[in-house]
Image 1 (spheres, rainbow over the protein chains, first blue to last red):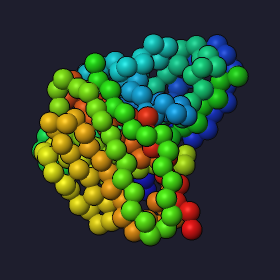
Image 2 (image 1 turned 90 degrees about the vertical axis):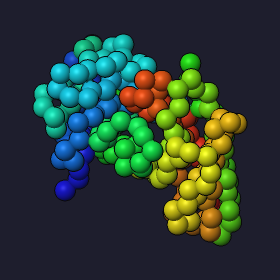
Image 3 (image 1 turned 45 degrees about the vertical axis):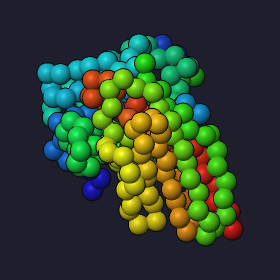
Image 4 (image 1 turned 120 degrees about the horizontal axis):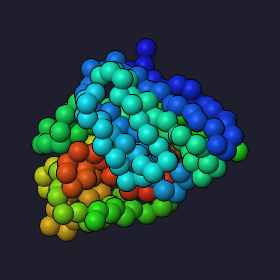
Length: 118
Length: 110
């Protein structure tokens, strides 16, 4: 079974609808992240969380909200979807703060959710 | 602020060696990472340099020069399956989350 799972894998919705993307992990990591990917723009950070009581905005948080329901679950919501939120969304997890040891740096990504807003 | 620059595309043939460069600007440095992403798939970790020098992992190597704010990923003995996008990344100023470059698309032909 995959360590980081995302549901749904694909979603088509209409402008103005509220939708939720879900992420679950079995790696036992405390840190979880949401990124969006647009062609030619790389991965941009939306929100991240270090535990259930810690939520932090990333570089493009406007129009999004998140919920950390448990250590293993981190959900991303689009309160009122708009077409320019059409993108590939990735959840990721990591174990610890950056440092000199490689294992502290690696992020593990889920398979992604392809969202289309019409 | 922070930024990373890398070429948008690189092409090469099977068996060749290719180098993907990454220059960055940051005020707080915690190391430079490299990730690989096949079309539409999840990014996967390749390499990490916290200190100057070369890190080797099989056919892939990564180099860092902190004084030049520069790193590169070196792919040797290229195979068709190496066709993918490659991203350099560094931690934000607080050291709490990764900031990614826009990616380099590598196309390997036979």
